[in-house]
Image (tube, rainbow, N blue to C red; front, side):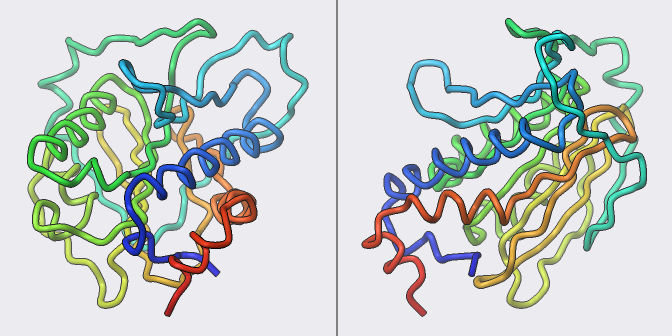
Length: 239
């Protein structure tokens, strides 16, 4: 059933779905894929009460009964990109971000229309992703929206240009982009491109260099979809 056309509704209505999808991803990660020493939390933007980022953090092992296992096999995605151009420049400046449960090791960012509605907004968004990667934090970016004139080759190209300006063309009919970034000095991107109506792939989320869990995006999406008002569903599912 996914991907639906969320360009058919105002950004505020997508935000309603965004919140539910974030919670479902968080819930499903905590109930299965994540090893017991990790927790997934829904973060909130500073200055607003808008849920935005899912953070995966270290938790005290005794507080969790989960037994998920991180996969060491390399993920298989449509595209893979790698660069070490920023490694030596940033090596001496890496910092650790901490939270009340411990060290943030990864986060998931669901792109909203507002992230791409102006040059300043897009620069802020890609800057946040690049800064996290330079600090050794792994990132999964999910973009259900088509490119704009500010990211004509998709959100991955805009992010990757912060590290290495190389060609990246979206396949015909697949202008939505999911990208998982493995941050370990040598930055690695695992990229899937999708079109309207495509099933959502399970995407890798790295929790340590070389180790990842698969995020059940389709399952979480459909759970959130069930709680989406019928009037919204009719609009975004229209052919």
